[in-house]
Length: 135
Image 1: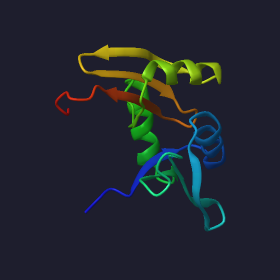
Image 2: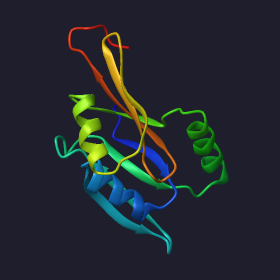
Image 3: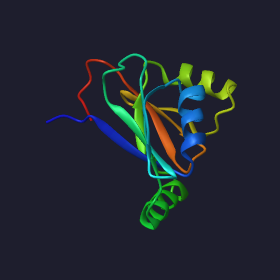
C-alpha cells in the first residue's frame, strides 16, 4: 500500500490550477471533465512527475467548506509540502505575491512556513534536517 493521491478541497479549480502551477511550481498531470461543472484535476512535483499527485478537489459537499474554513480560521494547514530550503521558498514565493500567515520558523530540526493558497486553504512548507529523528 502506498499514497498515490492527496486531495486538497478548493473553492475554484481553475484558480487553484493557476496558483499551484504558476506560483508553487507544480505541473499539471491529469485534467479530465467530471460532469458539467467539475474536473478530475491533479498536479505533481516536477522533481517527481510519477510520484504522489495533488488532487485539486472541488468543494462539492458543505462539510468540506465548513472543515476547511475552520482549519484556516484556526491557522491550521490542510497539508504540507517538503522543500529543501524554507527561507528560499518563502523569498521566491513572496516575490510572486504569495501571502504567508507564518514566516519561516525553526523548531529544533524542523523549519516551517505557512502560506495561503488563495482557494480556501493554508499550506505548510517544511524542511527537516537530515540525520534527525523523524517526526
